[in-house]
Structure formats: structure tokens, C-alpha cells
Length: 342
Ligand code: UFG
Image (tube, rainbow, N blue to C red; front, side):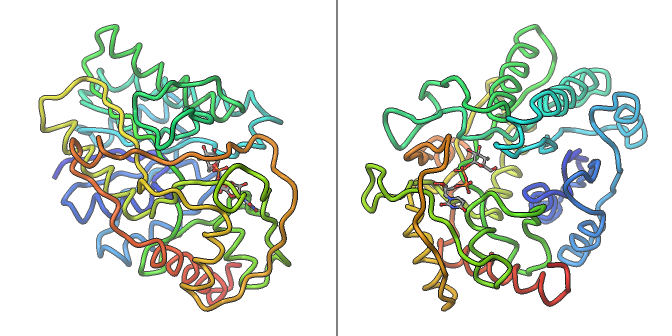
């Protein structure tokens, strides 16, 4: 079985990807410093797949500790690098923490890969690199614009670090995956998103409001130039997204391809905030308390993906209907209550 090192493998997208790697016959090894997740996730992954992934509590910024993992497992074929800080607002208050964590971890992995014969790295990037695109949907050739926060900048710089390293002759390959807005949870309700404190993202805020943890959802702006005035995003189911990583690993390892490839991962459909709220109410039968408030600083008006390249080249397509994804997000929130976690 091919060993795949999954950094941040106990986090939200990481944990769903570990399950899909196991389903596809790979042997994932999780490395996570548990700054935004817990080791209990490993038990839950085992409950879903029947297989316990190897787990190492290690910070990828610690070169020695990370190297020890490469040594311990030997013949790691590839890496999926999720481990990163990801809060837009927080990155503006503690930029150095963001640059240190997100850049040093990647630099360490790229340093170790050739020494241990690791062939490729799949990198978690974001549609944030496109800023507000002039034309939507955006394809992979759309211009990269200056980031509007340190978090977004780390994604751009990391993409460049990978390109420069490969251009310099490092014997590795890479696939950069630009996620749109990942939402939802595993249909088993055993894994999902566990936001720390007050959620910043829309769907966790919606589910927490629906269950009564939050009083009401603030809809940030209804005066945008969109069909109902609220912002448009491309909400992609986390399990669909996880499956794209498995295909990326297969492509990178088994096919003759360009050394660096980029894919947008979204559904191709733009959904407004108000449509999402309505979709949640319809999917779950739960009425949502919400209020329109002013715009949130830094929000782009609309961004959604042209996924033709992922469809045709990677052979991947988002499959889960939005209603099902929202229902899974709601079932996960109910599960967190049942288990007394939240
Ligand atoms: N929104 C609300 N109310 C809320 C939260 C969000 O109306 O309480 C709106 C936002 O204004 C936006 C949409 O819902 O129009 C989605 O907002 P999110 O915060 O869920 O996600 P973003 O599109 O802002 O994405 C950002 C970054 C991504 C990053 C992602 C996850 O741009 O790069 O957050 O952290 F990956």
C-alpha cells in the first residue's frame, strides 16, 4: 500500500481526505500538531473506515521532528499538505505567526522530500488567490491578484515556493488545489468542522444559529451587484473535495504530467448568501433567525469556479447536491450537541 503523509490530517478537510485515501487503498499517515483539532478525530476516522490511520503529533515547522516521521515510516510516496492557519481576520492581527507557520512548514517538507525519495506534494490552496476576478466563473488562468490579508498571501507565496523549488530542479512534482468554499460533513456525522469559538464562516454560523448557540445570523450586505444583493460563493461538499485529493495523488504519482499543475475545486455554481440560508431551511425544515447587516470588510462580491479542467483532466466532478451537503452539516451540528461537545 502506498504511504501518503497527510499534514493537518486531523483537521476538517484533512480528516475527510484520510477516509477517502483509505477507501481508495492508500495508507495515510497523519501528522498534526493539534492546534485546531484533537486526537479523538483519529478514533472517528477508524469508526468510519474500520482502519486506524497512523498518527504523529508533530509540528511540521519542527524540522527535526518532521524528519523523524519521514525516517520512521520510510518510503512515503507523497504528501498532502493541509496543515496551515486559515483565519482571515486573525492573520491580520498576528501576521508573523501566519507567515512562520504556513511558510516554514512547507519549506521543511520541500527540504525533506528529495532526501527521502518522496515524489510529490498536493498543496491546499484557495480561490482567495484570485481576489475579485473580473470575469466569473474563474478558471486556472485567471490572474492572481495581490492578497487582501496575510492568510491569502501565505497561499500565494506557498504556490510560488513550490514552483520555484521545482524549477530549480528538485526531483518532485506538485498539484496545487484551489478550493472554493468547503462546507458540510461526512454523511456518517462522525467527522466534520469544529470551529474554535465564534464561527467566522457562513455554514458553521448557520448551523450554530439553527441549534440555538447563536442568537441570529448576520448576513453581511444585501447591496452587492448580484441577483439578490448578497455575495456569491461556490460551496463545495467536503467529501467531494476530499475525493479530488485522491485523484490528484493518483495523477501525480502514476501519470506522465507537467511537474506543477493547478486545479480549481468547486461546483461551478454560484450561490448567494440568501439562497444558502433558504436552501438550509428547505433542506432541514429548520427556520433560521437572520438579519441583514452591513458589508464585512474584505469580502469579494462574487467568485465561483470554472471546473472544466478538474472535470476533464483530473476526472473529478462535484456530485453532492447542495441540499444534501447542508443536511449533513446540520446532522453534524446535532451530533455535536448529542455528544455534549457543543
Ligand atoms: N457571511 C455572512 N455571515 C456570516 C459569515 C459569512 O453573511 O456570519 C457571508 C460572507 O460575507 C461571504 C459568505 O458568507 O459572503 C461566505 O463567507 P465565509 O466566511 O464562509 O467564506 P469566504 O468566502 O469569506 O472565504 C474565506 C477566504 C477563503 C478561506 C475561507 C475559509 O476567502 O480563502 O474564508 O476560511 F478559505
